[in-house]
Length: 182
Image 1 (cartoon, rainbow, N blue to C red):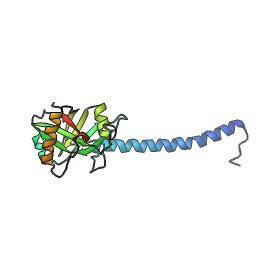
Image 2 (cartoon, one colour):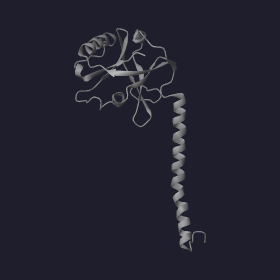
Image 3 (cartoon, rainbow, N blue to C red):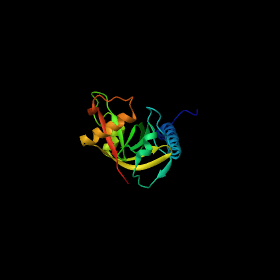
Image 4 (cartoon, helix red, strand yellow):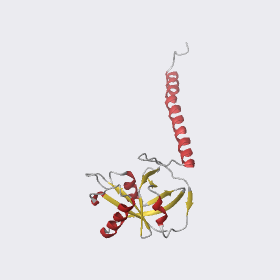
């Protein structure tokens, strides 16, 4: 009989054969995941509406930008942050050009806690390096949380002009990030 095991050594060999099956299946799944991630790294995965994405691809702009007003024609842009587990996390957000500088905003619901309740905000607080995708161009930059109330108020006033349909009743629920030059 092929299934009959006559010695303790034979039992161990039979058990080793059965133990290999989950390893083979697990290895195949890991290989598929690796191929998928490599493919996504090459082609990118932009966010859509409220669905986050991964890598942002496009024409890399390395020259410093002295006036971001060209973004006024873009209602939203994509922001890629670096997650703690190694994969990028990208989202769609609004952008405001104010006095030549570029700003990003993140609006929280009442009771929301900054930065805990938004993964991209947590990532930025931990690592301020971002990739911005505006049209077909990508910009590698750093961002800083705006802590000056006057600067924040001025940016939010400019935002109200660009996005009149977005009413901000409580400015304490809005966090503003300045894109650093260079």
